Image 1 (cartoon, rainbow over the protein chains, first blue to last red):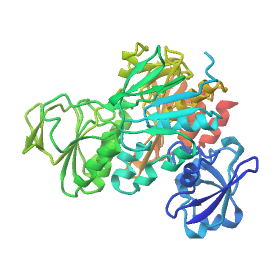
Image 2: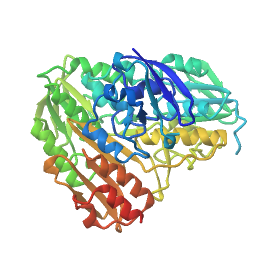
Image 3: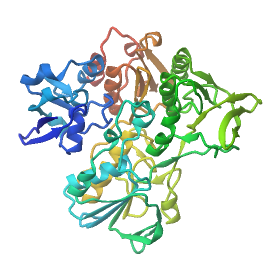
Image 4: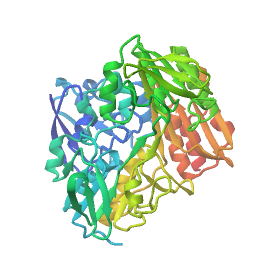
Length: 106
Length: 414
């Protein structure tokens, strides 16, 4: 289990309990977090679950695979801490994770 | 017609379009009653994984559901499951449900989806013969997917080939029958068909094209063989039928709502009755980027129409209509498709199919109309944007892998 805080572009914070094994995207969808559409349901096919990961957690969220890298290459407003939230698996180590959503997804 | 004062909205259907519509209605500020009537026993869930990760056992059932049961309660959405809508009374604005239920509506959304085409031959009802559309279909199929068993798949469309990839990976002996001269004939070009046929063949799947099924033979009520038109017997322990889907338009048709291979709608999803909307597989709508009307069988279409209908009912601005897109996972191949390739007059290949990373661009009069991108997200994502702008792009740029897709997109936009 991990508590994850989603911060929307207007600064609104929403904290949810996420289960180990599900993705940061899935936890957002189940809790209707605005700004994360995840149209493809987590197949890494649409880039509509783009988030910015809090720098303190960057190394805990795992490495980007080739597919995610090239999807992000075409997302809007990409930053060094950009990730596709469908590709981040929840573990105990992610407790306290903070991610924010880009304005373009709202 | 202004429906923004609606206080009773009913949705017939509980798939992707229905799930999106209820979410968008609540997010859009709708406070009235909201009722979903679904035929299946399950809450709305994702169908794509049924022929992919879920079929393979790599995904828990819980992860298929869009929302947990509590979400519907928290958002005051009534979900009536295992219920068949029988009739629309347009004059009284009521939806009738089997066994006597009647629901009043100000706005009715038909998200009735589609159903698999049935095999028109003898033996279609034998045990061991399955469609692949619902969660309960997969619950029946999965226990039979045991290494060494013989599976015959009728139809080499995306569903059939995705299931073949899963079954083959699980160690089944898989044969795919296709009447057309090539796999994926209805949905893509010969170059893609050839690539996928080769991939499956290399993995050990037997692909029989130009092959007509005569009937299925059984023993003790269970399927035992697929018999081809030429008399050949293919022993089978399990048969999957993937020969296309038909829109569930009868409810609308019987109520006198205009249908033509799908329930006809305007851009907002409104049918010929201004109080009735349609979204998803069952609806045929204007495809604004292609200048025609059509029915799309895809996640993107269901989501987009769910949003369009919700906005129209609430009187909110119409959400943007994106380029249609699709995907298919087979083995370690991710196919991403943007646009509709029908009517292309030129194909441009980028990359070598032999490397299992390439794209086929489809042009009409020099304008990019679609792409099939295999393990190539940049080609997919750049094309998705380019198709919307209707830009003309030089084929020799598209085929030149030394020019990054970003640069191609930028030059077309300039």
